[in-house]
Length: 265
Ligand SMILES: Nc1ncnc2c1ncn2[C@@H]1O[C@H](COP(=O)(O)OP(=O)(O)O)[C@@H](O)[C@H]1O
Ligand SMILES: [Mg+2]
Image 1 (spheres, protein in one colour):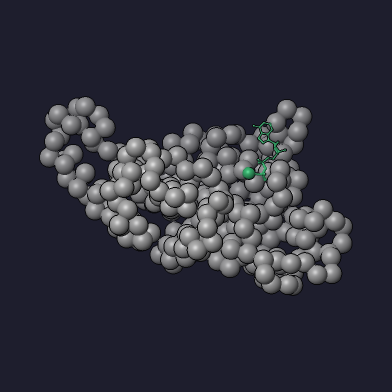
Image 2: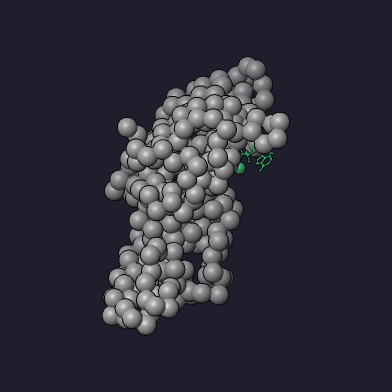
């Protein structure tokens, strides 16, 4: 069974059916793209996977467990992390502290833990700092460890948000537009890091509007339009799909030449 399996999921808000029976699968070690025009239901699908909403129909399996209806903290504890489109950081704290605080099950957060398990708490703090430094190295941000998060650029904040997700030892990370508002060089770096982590077995489900960036790195793409999954495949297959073009262009027919990034297909 796949790491994540979404099976015929439906969601309505009032009378509006926003997801009309969506299915997708994610295997371990893959970067999976989720694309589609605005309003097609991508964020709603993320919110269902992450436990913020309950689907009206269908099932979601994560690591062989049916998780629809689980609260977010329980899904997170199973190894599913979420990096928000707008990073939620502690701006006054350092980069290092932002990472350490993201780790789960800290003894130090309870007063009893501080008072009675001091040794264990100190050991855990040291281990978390070590882990945070490893992640900073991976993200090429070690030199920023002691900077306050508010001193970071928009792109660096996104990287830090991804770093915070990694601190929780996830097996699957959901990313909502990691390259939005980020300069192209840093955007490439975010995707290169993702690729390296995928080679180590981590999986990513990524909503992205910068299609040329996503298509360069993703193993597989799902395309949504108006609450339906309209096509899916490897990037090169999706690029050739008339359905993909009509969704984006709002046209029935594939246009003769469509510019895709700087290349023409
Ligand atoms: N909480 C909500 N209540 C009512 N309508 C919503 C809610 N969330 C999303 N929608 C509607 O669902 C549709 C899909 O939205 P969304 O999932 O954000 O699309 P996307 O992320 O693909 O742009 C939109 O028409 C949006 O207005
Ligand atoms: Mg959205």
